[in-house]
Image 1 (cartoon, rainbow, N blue to C red):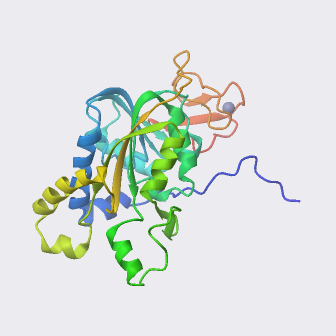
Image 2 (cartoon, helix red, strand yellow; image 1 turned 90 degrees about the vertical axis):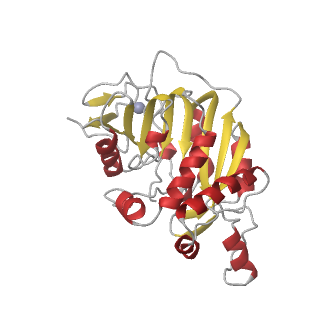
Image 3 (tube, protein in one colour; image 1 turned 135 degrees about the horizontal axis):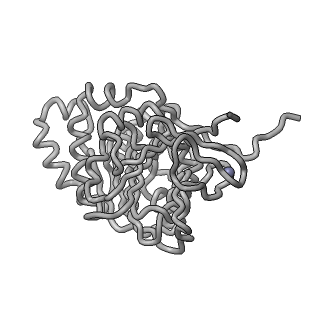
Length: 304
Ligand SMILES: [Zn+2]
């Protein structure tokens, strides 16, 4: 009989070695998407804080928007994306670069007072499981800003009613419309957040004009201006392709003991303080590498 792995983890969308930042953001015309995202974030971010977790930070496009935070952890599955972020933001003490799997976050419980996850849930095969990990890493009263791709958007509704699309935008389950690309129903996302002791504080509906035809016809400033106003309707209804939710972590949190920061992704025991070269887990013996200023928790390093 084949042996089952101890814990089967969902698949991860891997941007390793990808030119995503250049291809998707720098070269393509995404100025509209980027600007409406900046507006939404500005409206939802707390004025400041001590330690922010940016889940799926990629090449650090949004990181400069977290100015109020003393330190930011840029977490991504892709080392190459983090290297690009490092080139952009530098290595100073303010930014901590961590390569890790969202289903096995390497942080002790209750570490962060805020987290963001922008354009990342879109690639999550098991969203509740990823969100559970994030809730665990947050303190009580921490702010969590989540952006997700909305299956209940106007285009999908229209296509469904004109029979050009067979899946219903009204059903609660996620739709995987391309391999490892998922759109979610806003109600389902809210239900998951509530189940994880998040209290939903605010919702913004963004990117209503994300259609090439509209982007070509209307001036950018006008579209961004209208979008900025329409975002507020998100408190009442969400039919936009992108939805932002700001929620507050409620319920208990085990809190950080003894100044620990990282935990071993293999056995979940706290790891000794940040060091050079590698972090060794006293409980299970796994060793996690630190290379060129990036903590690598994707897989342990072999025996020396
Ligand atoms: Zn361990």
